[in-house]
View 1 (cartoon, helix red, strand yellow):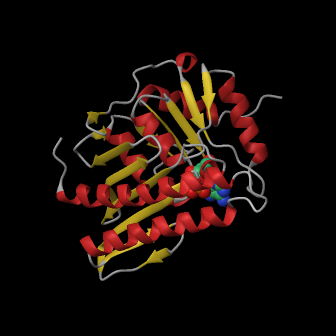
View 2 (cartoon, rainbow, N blue to C red):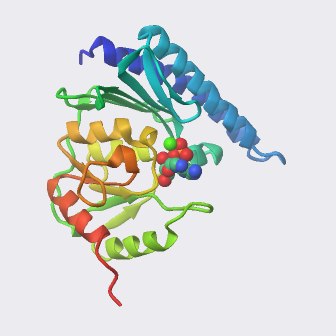
Amino acid sequence: MARSALLNVMVQAAMKAGRSLSRDFGEVQNLQVSMKGPGDYVSQADRKAEDIIFAELSRARPGYGFLMEERGAVTGDDDQHRWIVDPLDGTTNFLHGIPIFSVSIALERQGQVVAGVVYNPAMDELYTAERGGGAFLNDRRLRVAARTKLSDAVIGCGVPHLGRGRHGNFLIELRNVMAEVSGIRRLGSAALDLAYVAAGRMDGFWEDGLSAWDIAAGLLLIREAGGFVSDLNGGQTMLEKGALVAGNEAIHRALLKTVTKPLKA
Ligand code: 2AM
Ligand code: CA
């Protein structure tokens, strides 16, 4: 599969950061048993991965702006282009030695995501998409799953945790969804959740409380794999509001309706 020069730049950056994360992940597993625990080590791994991506992308495309999880917004001379980067999505998994984490890099051109890369270094799975060019897992073209009934569907979600709001809302959503579907999964990396929907591994996904860097690349993967994504009102504010529902056309429609169904007394 031939990749564009732009996508190559993104893939190189993601894989280089991924190699750094893989080395640190091995060490985190050794630190699990120590008294201090791996917390500080993980923050360092995260920052190191972000520094690698920042250096690689700045060198390849000087002037482009950035939105990064650790650095925040960095404006560049070129106001048409912005990288949206999460160097380590699935930090809690990484910290606990669970190999479900990823690097997520998206490129926005004039406010529209035109390219996206999600890389899981522990499984060496590289997801790529360019607007109009389809979505790929390594060299294989992706297509969202074809199941149309929620009763056959495996649906991913995020679960709010300590210090994050909306616990009550989430319980209502979960109660609505679990009554209708074949299974629910919670991977812990929103970028990978979206990649899994693009790959047809999960039939749909919903989550709230996310940031643009968690989802920018994954949204493009799903669209380029023929899927549908919206916010919880059926609109397109996912990057601004951090809430989304995804699936193929039928699952997206049914899941959106189910997630937002008012709770019966
Ligand atoms: P993170 O690992 O980069 O923090 C899990 O449901 C998803 O929520 C992950 O993609 C996770 O990204 C994201 N998330 C955003 N803010 C978070 C936070 N404060 N704590 C844990 N997960 C968070
Ligand atoms: Ca994240």
